[in-house]
Length: 476
Image 1 (cartoon, rainbow, N blue to C red):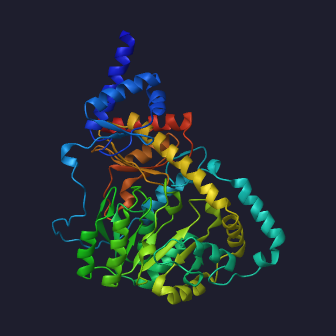
Image 2: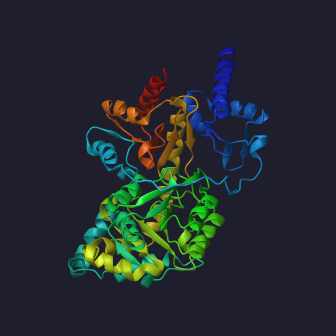
Image 3: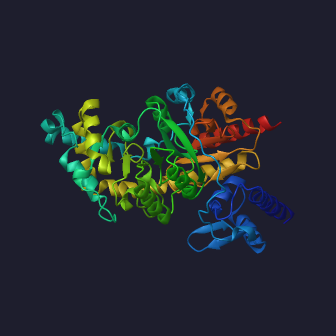
């Protein structure tokens, strides 16, 4: 009995400490009983006893069939709204991150390496053989179609399947509204080249995907970071202030499972953003590459509410199925003709074979079934990696619980420098991505993005423990 009492009090105290220090925020879900049982190497009954005590103390609450969540404090029980912040000057900045980004990306292909750096689901949880078999089938049955150029807009069968995805949109997208691209990045680049010119400023979330910043730098555009809520997305009041003053030529956002924060914007915020774009005639470039991975019920993109054709929708199957397929698409709204012109002079068209393969996988219902399984895998993996990170990283580490995708954004206690942590981790054959390249001004140097795309193994758990040790060493 004394041993049991000690275990219960020890585990309870550690959970309580993480909650008080903000590692688990109000409304965030705690790991499951079984996950905590494995982490602390105690019985399920011991964890249940801890939960009962924490609930009695008002620190957590249970939702049937959903799990255990951190209870809001009295100061947090007021509903959150997008209240306009006190007006402050928001100014565009030059982007100069390419060398740093390339340095952090380069070790990804090294072997052996534990890969927490690049955001990508592991091939182990992907239907590799089914996709490759479909390629073989297409090469036999549609060999000539695969041989020739596709129409610049894309293969008809593929465009048809893409258009069907918008059946439940308030403003549907037709086959004639679409253009197939070589991945999502080409779609974003085409959009930026159409609606901006060198020297123009583009409003962005902060932090935001470093690839988007790299495109801005290469094209000679400036970035204007807009304050971003970790669960609701870009602050629309601050964005409207910038739009009203005519400071930007475009806005670039992600509404679903944003990389790196992992949030999905509430529906009313999406609708409002679409209205703002129409009111100020400022195009919104929507990067929805993680949209198919949102846990639970799929969310409509901002494009679904685009009445004026100002939202340029960009996506691909690189994260949800096969990165090597390099198959994306763009719905440019009122900018379709100009995007089509740029596409034709850039690379004429997109390869036929991947489009025909994807059309078959979608038409058969296989892709839809695959997404259901993928979301379950990714949600489990992100939660398990969150639990490990909270166990091993220093107290005070804040982690955003993602709504989809496979990345975790860790805000480490200062003065930890994730750039230094990158070098230390690399020496241990662990690849991570430092936070400073997710902002054009080099902010977030104490933050870190981890990929949760792989099933959590003993090797991954050991690597997280090593990262935690390295982080602790920077505090001493």
